[in-house]
Length: 408
Image (cartoon, rainbow, N blue to C red):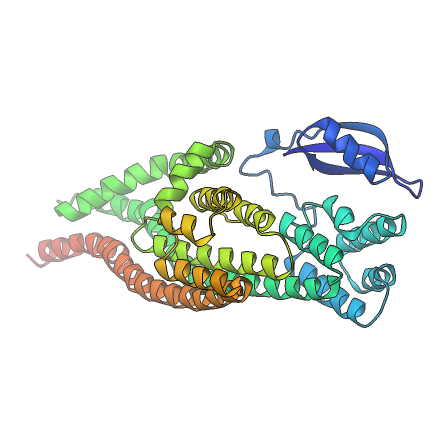
């Protein structure tokens, strides 16, 4: 899909500018015409050319928070189920939210719906706020006449997803902070403390022990090249990030290796399984066709290997197979997951079974994160003891030589 920047007159007569995704420019124009827009100007948005390590750092750009989208879904579901018309409900929510950017988006949705556009089509014009999964479920809710139920399920799905992310971030924050402190302490020791001691020892003209000599050479090297390594690392990361995002083969290779990492690979796989089952279960329960649901799930997988596995499963289902068979052949999904999905298909309770798998793997991820944190903390302590403690010992060894010389 290509992103096109367009300027057009909406049905209410207002000139609007936004971005739309389409395969070709002709398709983008047709989509706008279907929305009763009069196209003034349209061109391909050159977004990829701006991608870099600093591309997303913009202090003036305010993004819509995920918690706002969750609250929006839950509150709109409550209003619709209470009998409040959709346009009126959007008007109420527009007044309630404090975020100016989100208020503007809700206002845009309300105006589009007033002009005869469906809410799913109106949401498509804001891909940075409403994901393809979100829009697909809303469309299914419109078609099935269960928009309030779908919005409620979306809110539950978003809450569960954010809760899982928060657990991982919360558990990993302590080891990360301690690691940064340890590395910073080592850098300060090498670039500031050790050189001062080295100057003092040089003035005394004392023969230094081998550990101290090695440490002084390392400190001298670090003081000269530390900035080179820091900026070199930033540049390397920026280039790697660009290649990773733009080259499918590189991304597939890296993502495949990530799943095979000794400790982190198991955590990544469990997180991916939890995300896959919850997303697919929510989509199927909301009435989204299985082929469309799998396509949407693949795009939100976050791992190229799992994404291709899901797409292969989709093609197999198109040819008449069940979903469990291609997942089993891939070897990516655990046997228990495949078996439970197979049972869900046979009993006609696939959506419920997928949600149960997601809940089970949420707990598995929490346990895995706790275990990982428990393993990392002792390693950090050992690192501090060996590196920082070793530096301190190496710097104090000459003191004993000096004391012996004075005593003699």
